Length: 194
Image (cartoon, rainbow, N blue to C red; front, side, top):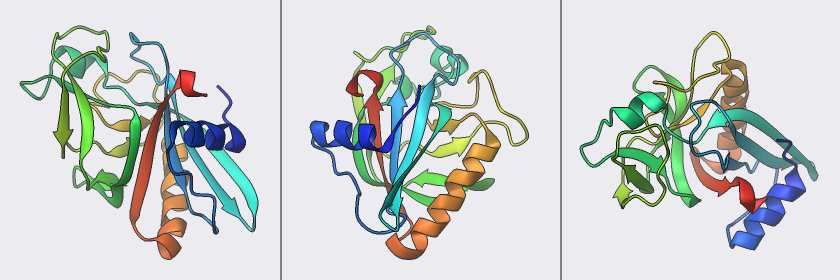
């Protein structure tokens, strides 16, 4: 799926979400969830859209916005596995350490998640919703190679498949943080929103 700046901007405005279109490196971090509810692959997209010297830029990476099959079948939480509810989450993330190991975007504000508790491989978005701090971070899968299967890489986090894409994302966040601060808004769209 190819994602363009204008396409994201239009989708965000149509949903009533804020789209950062002013200043250099004012990043829009946007997940796009695939309509495939039974995947254990990196079939979603993670997009970054910004302007520099007035020129729009957009990158999109292979990612997952869903937990892997392992965690769907073996929930960490007694109420069920966390699946982020689509929406806009102002200031959701800050630059920090994922599980104390490496630099990532870590949850600092409340998020809404579905609690899928039937322990099968299908994502259930009609599950009860929970609101709070659950460690819904943005991080990478493998440190050394592009991952093909989600499996244990996500228990509800937004995860990029390729470590080089993730390094580029963090570099962009570092540049943005110098001007806009270390907090980042995240918006999760669905494929149909585009």
